[in-house]
Image (cartoon, rainbow, N blue to C red; front, top):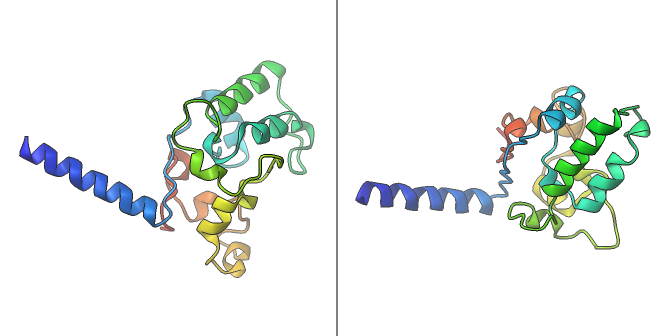
Amino acid sequence: MIRFLIAFVLAAAWTCAAQAEGSADLPPIHNKATTEECGACHVPYQPQMLPMRSWHAIMSNLATHFGDNAALPEKTRSEIEAYLLAHAADAPGDTFGRRFLDGIPFATTPLRITETAFWQDAHGEIPAAVFAGPKVKLRSNCVACHSGARLGQFGEAE
């Protein structure tokens, strides 16, 4: 029992320390359509990173998805949107995404995670040259620095 208690306390302390350093670990995506369809072009982003209104706007305009045609059959599109909405930062009962809402005025609908205050605060000390460099190339290329991004692990750069 003592070993269990010590392990629990250490795990809790590590979690608090990681969050204090800007860790943003989130649950992995458990929707096959989301991981397959979104993951075909980029890392599937955890839905907790944006509010419901943002995911709805993104999923409502897939024919011009950030300059690409990402249109999907309606059944697949609606399944992915339902998953994203159910797990969004402001979804009822969500406990992971609340911190991503900080700094997003209710009247705005961010379409890019990289434009949110949470992302900018977490990455503010990184020089622009790092994002433009050959390893990263784009601010949205999470896996370039966070190898566990596909599993929802966005701790300090690895």
